[in-house]
Image (cartoon, rainbow over all chains, first blue to last red; front, side, top):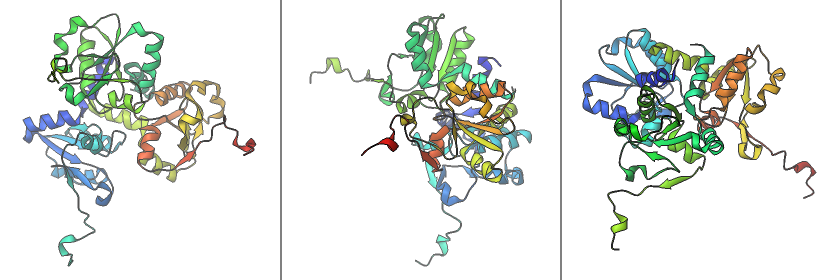
Length: 130
Length: 130
Length: 130
């Protein structure tokens, strides 16, 4: 592989937070943002605004919910997690178009881009009497 | 691609901050450090010591200023930005020798390596009466 | 290279901190964790629990100490260092099985995974009279 391929591959398969922000503002209907982090909501604490949550370990059971005509933008925790890469493989092998959001939610927060607090399903606040 | 190629490609196309520091001390005339971050100076705040500033979006108009015989070391914000990779593609396709500085200016600062404060062209301090 | 290869290569050659933690708990005898950071102990300060320390610059002189039947998991400082990649090349070219621990000791500490303090050989505390 030459150097041109090295950089082309990365640009083809990943979005920086800034590039995804710009692309999704210009073409909001072209992308689905997918949070594939595994683990319970109280560890995740928050998600990127507008993200659909399907943990990577459950992804193969939820393929029918994911549109094939859109670009699926996958993220996990940080630049060193492989969960989004594993999810990307599952989707690519099933004919989806994907990109990984580089740096995950950690990079997104470094940019001060908007997130949404997650409430734990184990804490039924709606039924709380207090 | 086998694993040897995986690691070789990365080493061929990138410098860690430490490796660039050592290489440029040994052969200061062999490298040009190029800051390709887009965006205004007040957001950039500082640059790596000795870096030439050409934003990636303006790079194709400034190719004549970049020496072909040297190795152009490109950096952007952080490990998850793709701006240096896009600049690398432009330069490689025009026959330049390039490496990306891994981790951008963020990694450089983590190492406590020297940076220079940037003054905004919108704030003409030299003409300031105060 | 297509996108499937891009993500497969990364998953094949790297472990996230979480994935290594899980894999080494399930099969503790299958892995050797190798700290290949160069530099003196007072800079390293601590290492990942259970790691064997062989600096990358000395690795070729210590190959006989490294078992060929195990998977050697290599780490350096952070996601942007290339020292583990250089060590991976040396080991792969000598017939070892390797993976890089993504993000190095910095990512490991972000996860609050266990580390061990290093004592400097330059400070002979055992012989200290105080």
